[in-house]
Amino acid sequence: MAGTVAQQFAFRAATSDDAAFAADVMTAVTPESPWDPVSLRYWWSQPDEFTEVVRFIVLRGERPIGFTQIDHARWDVQPERYASIRGDLMPTDRTRDALSALLAPMEERAIADGARILRVSANEDDALRSGTILGRGYRKDRHQRRWELDLVANRERLLAMTAESRERMQKEGVRLMTLAEDTDPDVITKVWRLSEEAGDDVPTTVPRIPEATESYTRWTNAPEIHRDRFWIARIGDDVVGLSVLGYPPMRGIVGTEWTATARAVRGRGIARALKCETVAQAIALGVDRVRTGNDAANAPILHLNETMGYHPVPGRIDYLRAV
Ligand SMILES: CC(C)(COP(=O)(O)OP(=O)(O)OC[C@H]1O[C@@H](n2cnc3c(N)ncnc32)[C@H](O)[C@@H]1OP(=O)(O)O)[C@@H](O)C(=O)NCCC(=O)NCCS
Image 1 (spheres, rainbow, N blue to C red):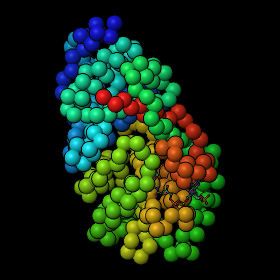
Image 2: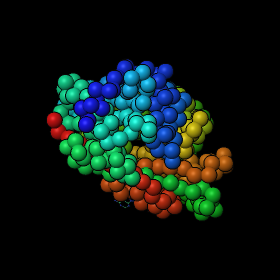
Image 3: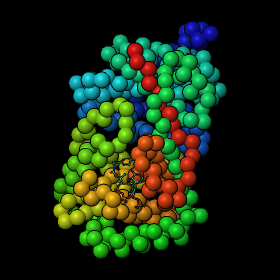
Image 4: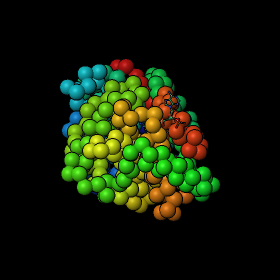
């Protein structure tokens, strides 16, 4: 019975020292998508101007068996009051009742904190988790597609596409470079402004909240980000596009963190040119495959991924429940 299992669980506040354990839990649950302990620790150590986060380690007796997290935008910046509940349990302890016993107290806590709509996600090939979520009264909301690009099988095609894109950019006066090559002291502010504009164009149900400039500085300092692998496009003084692969320092698959172009320049091949630079560089670094993810309603990026040779892998389903 769920109640019996719930009584066996205790929760203690988690700190950044617990991030490596949380990364181990997620890696055990999805060995095909390992989580990096170094990156996770970094992110667990960072503040956030507009988001509130609490994290717990789930204990059965004295034994840590999982972790959980509630995060939500500050209510003053997102009056709709969506809250996300995350986390998981080690496979040895991961039954439907146990997952339910993890979710129930987190739901109570989020509601007590003022949440009006709860969000939980599951990988689309994870029937145990999605069954648990549906059983708790959630309904399916959005589908996040995931893709993988085989850099060995597609090498020649990708390098040819990169050469073609470079030529097109040169003709159009668009300069492609990395952050490391850029000398503009305002470049991070420009990347932030561009990302805020493009961020509003990503299909979403949960309203996007603003991000502070500081969060871009934190991102460029993250262990998975390298300034000489952070690609931007410039027209004159303006930053008009960016595309970035994250390289997990300890374990995990190299993946796109963010691709965006300014509204004024869309449809000119700039996003393709930037993504090509990131994968050509990954090929040169000896990476054998990269991943990317995007909302299933984001037509331009779906088209780009398809035409670059990405193939779909199981994605993620977001579920919502009004309280
Ligand atoms: C997605 C995004 C980066 C594309 O930028 P872009 O500079 O317009 O991209 P490109 O010009 O290189 O390529 C766009 C491709 O999508 C195609 N496209 C545009 N709108 C489309 C639509 N509604 N349906 C299908 N294809 C579409 C274009 O024809 C072009 O394909 P082509 O090269 O075969 O002609 C840009 O729209 C953006 O910043 N969106 C908001 C941020 C975002 O969603 N980022 C990705 C989320 S992870």
